Amino acid sequence: MPFSFTRADFPADFLFGAATAAYQIEGSSFGNCGSSHWDTWAATPGNVVNADDGSIACDHYHRMEGDLDLMRDGGFDAYRFSTSWARVMPDGRTVNPEGLDFYDRLVEGIVARGLKPCLTLYHWDLPSPLADIGGWANREIPERFADFTRAVIDRIGDRVEAVATINEPWCVAWLSHFLGLQAPGLRDIRAATRAMHHVLLAHGLSMEAMREMGQKNLGIVLNLTYPQAASGSEQDLQATRTFDAIHNRWFLDVLFRGHYPDDMITPLAAHMPDGYEEDLKKIAAPMDWLGINYYTRSIVAAAPDTPWPGFANVDGPLPKTDMGWEIYPEGLSSLLERVGRDYTGDLPIIVTENGMAGDEQIKDGVCNDPVRVQYLNNHVQAVRKAIDAGVPVKGYFAWSLLDNFEWSFGYEKRFGLVHVDYATQTRTPKASFEAFRSAIK
Image (tube, rainbow, N blue to C red):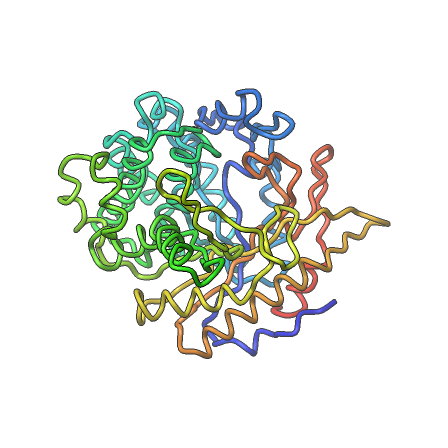
């Protein structure tokens, strides 16, 4: 099944790419990589499906060349990858030469294949020694992140096309410190509130460090959602506003308006770090682009008998992915139009992740994934709709190049354009990979 779009349907400077993350593919047991809080989270029984971990993952550390050949052969323009803080600085402070050497080889390989390297500095792998001192709840972590930024940029910054500071700060902070669903698995409103601020301060200090080094084309990647009220009742509408404040406006308001939303500060005021207001100017420093990750919409209902935030997610009626996420491409175009209208204006936006988990099997050497082909096709068309509405969307990155370690879901959830047999590490491009190749090469 081919895609219904071609490269000619998009502006000449539009980038098509695929994305990965270090801990999910590299193998944290290689190259003198240090322990991260994801290694210890995964080692704790009950946290990850099947007690899986990222120690081997896709063995990208040793199979990098073949994986980059796949990127080239797919006709992509750019490869979005992340650096592992624990690989570069196993103790969170001291550089591991093998770690920087690996990323030097990686960037050289990307460039040699005519691809644009798009770097994300942090995709969730906090070094365990920094977790030992409180992790993102500790204000020291943003300072250490600025040091990490300088080490990475000093080595590979001359060859990267774009740099994102943090991937999905909502997941880093709220999902992991309030809901407790990812490492470090806390359920503590004070830790969550401080993490929500400190991860953004880390972005600001990282931006400041890179500007001082003359690095260009800098941004951040937010996982935003398209919230809809379950009904027109005032209770559901208010619950949806609260949901939007936690997931979207907390980040967008401070990055683009220099303040946190009032309806978040009021319930969280007692837990905010002293003097946090002094950090807001650094957090709101101008960026060159904004990255948005989108997977599904959120239907929100009031839960009046529960404590703040007092809402519940409602299952939608549309088909679901293997993650149980509703397939709703219209939410992507609506979200892009809202962000462009209310926040970013002429600032370029890049869809830095979009994709779905499916349960695909290889049969006679072929891996067909027709649902993913349709999913990707419809979401790329949603991007084109936003462009037609005047939103300056400059790129689309499919998540993910490879099936990989899907965090708390282990290896059961497959998002890849390329199937990975984890027993043999054999790569088999899926039909969705071939659809991309046909449409954009």
